[in-house]
Length: 280
Image (cartoon, rainbow, N blue to C red; front, side, top):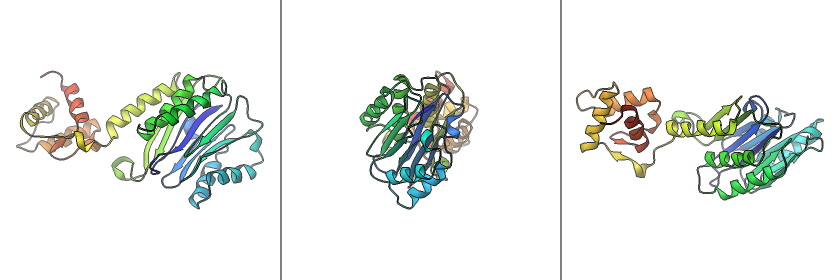
């Protein structure tokens, strides 16, 4: 009833799961990931116990293949289960029980595993594999989503579409650095959930992405004057010379505080301010 990819980033710092299904709120059932440990996807009459059990085994250094073997060996319902696991190193691992509804199967490689059941055919997994392997230069969450979208375009779940989710963990990657959850986005019930998940990821990147130091612009001269005028137009006038305080005030309302750098401005923030305040 589901197709997914579990993967490790090339630098080994991030783990994630991207999943879609003709199933309500698939993100509440399938994915699990832990920073520094690995990721698990449990599906096809999903055994939700696989998530904590799989992560616990990975935490002790058990290889992904052995994690999968241990999970299914202890499960009387293994014939109808499907699971994908990736650990801190080596190939990912996948398992498809003989009783899973066809088409069902999976593929693995260094740091990834893709699997699905009730699919239109093996072309779904092939498309996910090819897109994952071709996307080495992109941001890790975008690369996961691209692989999922490729599987969706190739046919996906043969019953149709309903939900999708993306979970990515990375050390200190969460909001304000206070957690390791870099991305946790869910589309629970939607006619085109993978596309909607893409829209949410774009918004997430806008609001919570970290600024590129090479692109930051100094808040001096004409640019400082423009930002001052636009902040005033947006209802956040600058008191005295404290442009940073006014920018912080405005950005907090717009949920852009993660992109602020004192005395400089992220072009993403500047573009948003310009769009909000229109032509000068």
